[in-house]
Amino acid sequence: MSVSSAGHHAGQVPASFEIKSAQLPLVALLLKVSDIAVVAADVLKKFGPEGESPDFFEHDALVIDFSHLDAQTPVFDLVPLLKVLRACSLVPVAVRGASPEAMAAALAVGLVEAPLDLHRPRPPAEVSESAAVPETVREVIHEVVREVQGPGTMVVDKPLRSGQKIYARGCDLVVLAMVNQGAEVVADGNIHVYAPLRGKAMAGARGNTQARIFSLCLEPELVSIAGVYRTSEHALAPEVQGKAAQVRLSDDGQEKLIFEALNS
Image (cartoon, rainbow, N blue to C red; front, top):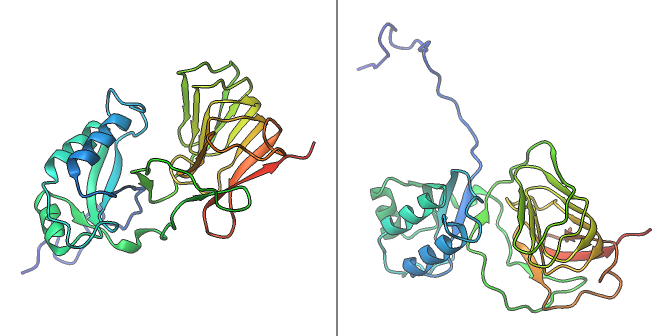
């Protein structure tokens, strides 16, 4: 039996709608532990209404990635985690890398199965100037699947004090004054600081691995590009510490941070 919309014969294209393929930017929650209560608490602390970055997401579609968990991990109730994610302005839509049992549980709560090759695999993050530097840091529990870029540049012409945060969503960020310790500058694109950078700077916040950080005086508490980051616990090399320099990801696919002096 053929099915068609009212007023149309079978085989005709309806005038009221059209079904087409589409690409959707997705954020992936990469599960590193099987204790969902721990994951939910960490996500809420970071991105919840009372968290550190409550406005980081804006109803972004999200896929839950099980691929780093052991296949024998017991199936757990996803409903509490879904409630937390929605409270953080995320919209869970899919699951990938789950065991058959976990996938069945995800499908039962309305999620769909996403392919594992939804994006190119990301190797473990390493941090270095010319080689990897050991560092004890907390695992980042979110990962951007698809790069999202937008036009324009945000310009800030006043100093940023401790506790202040600027986020340039979908664009580059230019800061014309000092970024003090305790301040935070975040951009989906590049970050340019035409003054001392002494706080935290996170470029490529939504996965843009081509983003860079530039400063006329590099003295940061933390720098990060597309989730690969380094803290001030490890001193910078003398040729870039307190000098005009840039930070970028290496070109060899290893995703290491490279610090380079800018020639005057």
